[in-house]
Amino acid sequence: MGFKDPKLDDRQRAAMEARKALLEKFKAKPGPGDPEYEARKKEREAILAARAEREAAKQAELAEKERLAELERQEAARRLQEELDRKDRERTEREEREKEEEAQKKAERDAKYAARKARAKKR
Image 1 (spheres, rainbow, N blue to C red):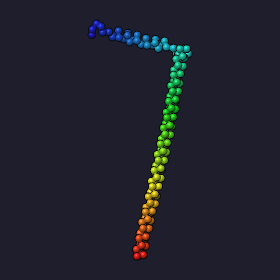
Image 2 (tube, rainbow, N blue to C red):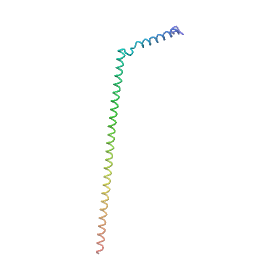
Image 3 (cartoon, rainbow, N blue to C red):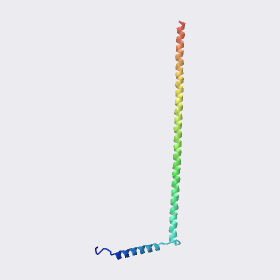
Image 4 (cartoon, helix red, strand yellow):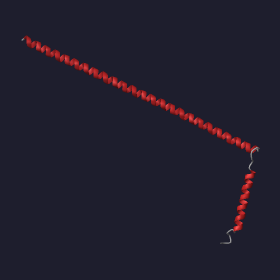
């Protein structure tokens, strides 16, 4: 050990002084009933109340955003369903039109065939 190293009793004395300083610092703080203590307590309570209010506002905003998103999803689903219904109606109408055209063509073919048969009988 060098000459600059503290001895055991020096280290113990320094630790004891540090504990005393810490105790004095703790005792020096104002306690309940002291105006400074009460003022700091009210300030902390105000901060907590403001924080709770901000959190409530944030939650309300998130709930509103979620509600709007849900409405948007419902609207998109409704539009998609309308589009599917419209395409289904168009397909059905197109199939009916094709069936009618097919029936009309068949009727025309049958009429031509019947006319040809009638001409053939007349001969």
